[in-house]
Length: 391
Image (cartoon, rainbow, N blue to C red; front, side, top):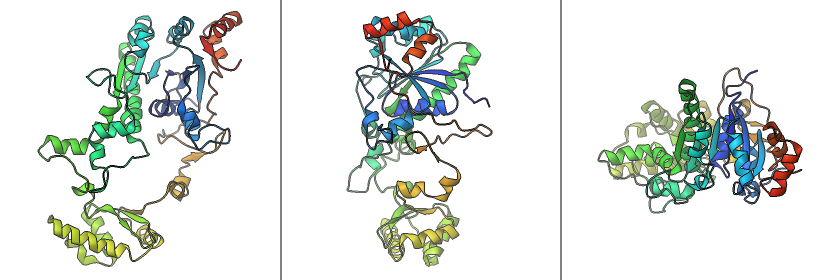
């Protein structure tokens, strides 16, 4: 059965998390992804614990499944020549270098577009291709900081805390890259021309902070921890149970709020909400007292029978055991151990069978052969250090 992105060929120069996740999502939809890796700059994600049964970082194995691998030294003339040849057989380049790095090596967007006008180039960087901060490095924590997100992520008086889900990387980098690439492919179908997609993870984090940005732009000031309907007011917060677990209460709509109060055995609280801080504090205290009377299992059963946007906060292991996720097969067996599947599902398209993440350079000879190089030419490139990988 044909897949949605069958025939789309991608050169992936990225490492760590945002870029590899973006190309994984495209690979899961049928794109052919070739990782282009450096001989002496290993992807640190490969060594991040825990390791899978193959001895590889589990996150690295997930992000790089269903991809081929070519090792090329971009600092060599031979390596640069290989890349120039590859762009004639590929549609998209995805890279995560700081602005200007590939330009200085002679294999940047402008140089390669001159040779291949249909080339789509997606550059994922910390702060984008222009602006006074274009050359600054950054990680997820930095993007959340400069975008204002970190300022209202924690509890009042406690300060911000790191968010291990890396929203700045994934929401700020991965998903905009996927959207940009697909939009550029559609546009190229009309115009015949590729283009540069400029993804700034700091911009993406600011967009993730859009509700607070709207507040700031229209006279509402800066969002603070515990402030506002979505910042931890009565109907949108976490409440501790008798066994030290938490209930996530998102009963914003009046009908859900009424059901929640009824489930607590306190229907009179339904009309007790008010804007006065003292009233809000008293109401939250009353709710906290009621929730604390029973353990998480009790409340889980109660709200399973009375759905009103209230759930027990689960650990990741508990989440993976939920029947909902099991029914949707969000985890499937893979070489090296079970892996999380893409959340993007197209009706009538079977999920791609997971293939293990290729060892760096595992496909070097095959890829060079597809470019028309013979054994002697491949060995010469290997001998010069321009390419690498298992013989």
